[in-house]
Amino acid sequence: MKRQIYNCDVLVVGSGAGGLSSAVSAAHRGLNALVVEKEPVFGGTTARSGGWMWIPNNAPGKRAGVEDSVEKARAYMKHEAGEHYDPDRVEAFLEAGPKAVEFFENETSLQFDLGPTFADYHPDAPGGLDGGRSIVARPFDGRGLGKEIKRLRPPLAEITFLGMMIGTGKELLHFFNVTRSPISAFYVGKLFLKFLRDMAFHGRPMRLMNGNALVARLAKSCVDKGVPIWTRAAVKDLIRDDTGRVTGAMVQTARGMVEVRAAKGVVMAAGGFPQDVARRAKLFEHAPSGNEHASPAPPGNTGDGLRMGQAIGASVDESLPNAAAWVPISRPVRKDGTLGTFPHFVDRSKPGVIAVTRSGRRFCNESDSYHDFGQSMVARCTEEGGEICSYFVVDHRTLRKYGLGFVKPYPVPYKQHIQNGYLLKGETLRDLAREIGADPETLEKTVTEFNVHARKGEDPEFHKGSTSYNRSLGDPEHKPNPCVGPIEKGPFYAVKLVMGDLGTFAGLKCNEYAQVLDADSKPISGLYAAGNDAASIMGGNYPGGGITLGPAITFGYIAARHMSGANA
Image (cartoon, rainbow, N blue to C red; front, side):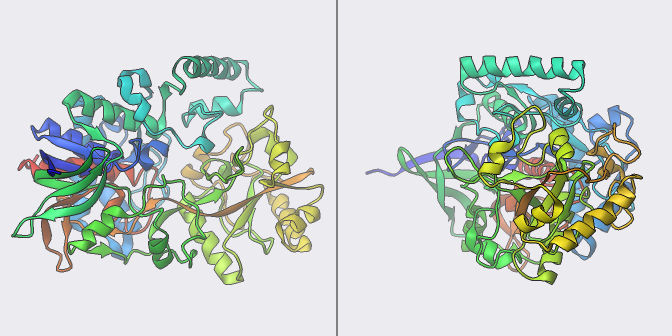
């Protein structure tokens, strides 16, 4: 059988934000791009994510009067990355990020909304801001994708409401206040009716939000530019010429093996290694077998980009203090009996919520970033010995007002979660302690001492609610501290947390042009990386909401710029 050959300028491996932004940017510069995705749907982890992008000095922020500067952003990133600060790549990000945003706004279907109160995660650090660096894709009507909507990866089911996507900020507050505010009830009711209409006529929501909107807008831009997106197309090997330059790849498709020849280069954007059990075992301290970890990433994110890069001499940076972006995960039970993955973003910051290990003691400021929470959980559990896990603890009033994890607030029923073991219940704190395997006296003492100060809105032990980021996810109507309230009247409830990730930080070493480097730190000609296949520029830390997707679309833009021979 004759080998099939496909010619293009740019081959992009992976269809998340990094890959699609590379393809769209390349096509705009007159290059013929092709996106290949091994799964049957496109969108990668991005389509399941919150969709936020952290890009200092972005145009939406400037229009809103946010006072930012390259100097402030540089100071903040130096503080966050510490000894792993990469000045060349950071400068490239700070220079190209605002240009990438303006390019996507002006030349593509990707439009942005600002998170004006979405603070940096360490806003009191040098160069930190109380808001303005995180942007999100504007909601998108899925019908604009035409028939391609059928191939868009759906959002993570656990963070939807019956499949309906919910935006952050004011929209989320409407859902929390649905039983207390006629305005919120009307708002939510209207959205739900549209959702039911879409499900009846299209079989899926058409009001796309968050990461789903980001992927849809980038995919629409690909369609408009004539960029094909092949799904069920797995890259098997990279191809090099006699000089060692990467000139394409062998791609297994439903039509057989195809030799894709890429004249300008190949972009690895296959989503990092969150589902690569072997590399997790090597790099995740809390997962010695690789299985003590729960990732909401798609099953196909198995480290293909890193392995193929290493096979031709690329170097993987494994030196970062955190190999991934940590997030606490609970495991709700699905209807078929399998376990889901629920990443805890918002509930941690609500008043009346604390986290304890099996010692029965708190270990952190629960409303700090999920990455900080994860680091604290691992440190405390390692110190205490035993399983790396913790538990959120609330009383009945808090559970019904705010929900907890996959358990939704009143009036949504919750007892099925007790029956299937996701939600643990105790009539008293001592009863609950026995359910979670903690010492009853210690848990009771922890809550009693917490309540003394919580009644005044204070948390002298861990200072919950002390920063603008903490407060941005609390309950603004709860005074005096939107993040702190007592845990008083039983029954009491708990949800178990294990470690998860929002993407991997360890990745292919790259330079400021997104070129992949070899063991001697020299560029491998024709090979680029974007998104989580590239080593993070954040030094193993998590400075703000969107520090994976912001650099992903920026370095996708940079890679295309370099392949086209342009400097701007």
